[in-house]
Image (tube, rainbow, N blue to C red; front, side, top):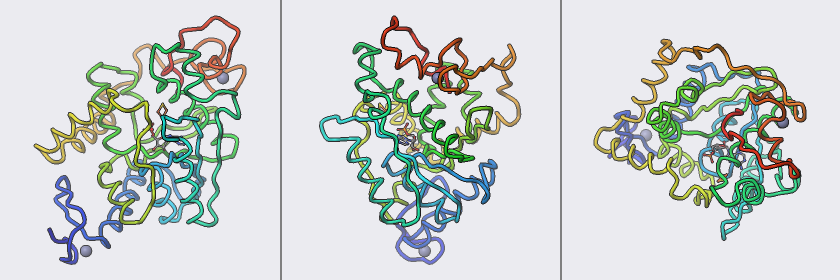
Length: 318
Ligand code: AMP
Ligand code: FES
Ligand code: ZN
Ligand code: ZN
């Protein structure tokens, strides 16, 4: 396979774009494609201060790299979840983030250590609250969202960027459609606008295939953690990803069409705002972040040790 631009050996053939590119032209194209996504969905501009949530994986580190190359002001946030999984998952992830920072002098990294701040690692707080009934992923998601928002607000960032790629977004979309989660469908977007107490959230890789991001990391020599979170192995999202990969194999472009078609339908008002009107939000009396539930938000209730265990809806607070 030859590069469309220079006829040299192509490192990646993107059947969905009918485009094959070489080691030099692929990263150029990938960076400009990301810039087009940023502009298309009005994510941010050069005046914004961006906080990139970096997990040590290929997506978030590549995103940080691309934003810096495009000349944006972008700092990093790493949340140490205290997950071991028998191979030091959180420690290894942090090492990858540190290596990236060392290779990019001048960038700033914020580090949140969940156990250091709140007294328990993710597996610890999850086993106390869930008593082994479930995996810690929902509790972990709640804590990550809360901490990302807290740091963005406290440190004066105008935008919070995550590395979610097209494969992630499409798997969530399929799940939301299969279960007709209309509330989640309404909120699933490349940009979530800022509100009182909530930073703007953006996903600049939402139109980029996972294999494109992986190829970008490889070509640019970005070292990242290959292992995924030990609790994610065998989860439903990965099952949906496998199904979607089979569809994509038969019909290249399926994922992108499914996602872009959804976004177009959203823009055209197919998913209209809640029939019952906007959801009432109020600031949590302890942390100040907006919440839909009465009293303390789901995050603050996690750390209430003495009270009766409450059945929080982990996904209610965004
Ligand atoms: P995940 O929920 O693991 O699929 O990760 C989605 C995105 O959340 C990543 O691309 C990162 O931007 C962000 N993220 C995940 N884990 C962390 C972490 N431990 N610290 C900071 N950001 C994270
Ligand atoms: Fe949070 Fe896996 S990353 S449980
Ligand atoms: Zn080329
Ligand atoms: Zn709270």
